[in-house]
Image (cartoon, rainbow, N blue to C red; front, side, top):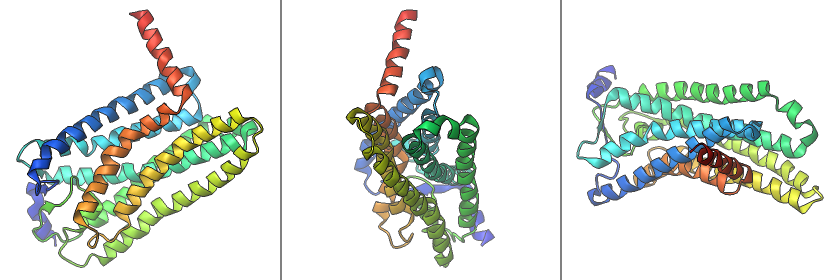
Length: 312
């Protein structure tokens, strides 16, 4: 096995859409545009959360964590995608592929946990409003954020290391846009049933279980919102929670589809385009979802732009 895997010191070939070369320039333009929007949108949220005192709240602390995560998540894969789509060279070094595997899985698992943390924050805000500042104190916020990042890292170390032990036996062509666990399992020439079982169990823990917790918390939130007397109060609570729910379903839906389907039986094209969705599309739309329906963020942006014009 070691001998077989040593042959990969020269790297792997990321196939992407190389079987449809006429689509490569279209994918390059779309992915580049999406990446630039991702950089701009998430950087704006981080900047506003840091500079505007009115956004120094637990909700925006976690939102800036999500934006930081999305920036790193998309940057771990998109630049390599763009390089491979631009020219004839589709290779990625062995070290680059391994790094991408670890980092991509780390950030993806972290987002799974962070979305649960954000649901807990919304639960406390709506269901325990009088105790919100006491419960969601800075110490707890930092602790919850650390649990999310370290939990994701632990998952990545276990899953990625386990995947890299598979005998690859000369298969260098990764039929995907990036190096990720399902795509690497498909390269193996031996029995991968144990790896698929571990992948499914870990992914169930990091997707189905958190998603269930989020949905249960939103059942309590819905009950609390319906008890609010004023229509304005109901609308504000509904808008804040709806943004988070849309992000949850986009991320978890694509992750469950991409990781919980059997690695060797799912369609190659379906798998690679689902990977593209949660690595490119989701990080791009997250800031749009949170800003387009959020008066506080739009107000902070107007104040920042107003100060910029005054200084100019």
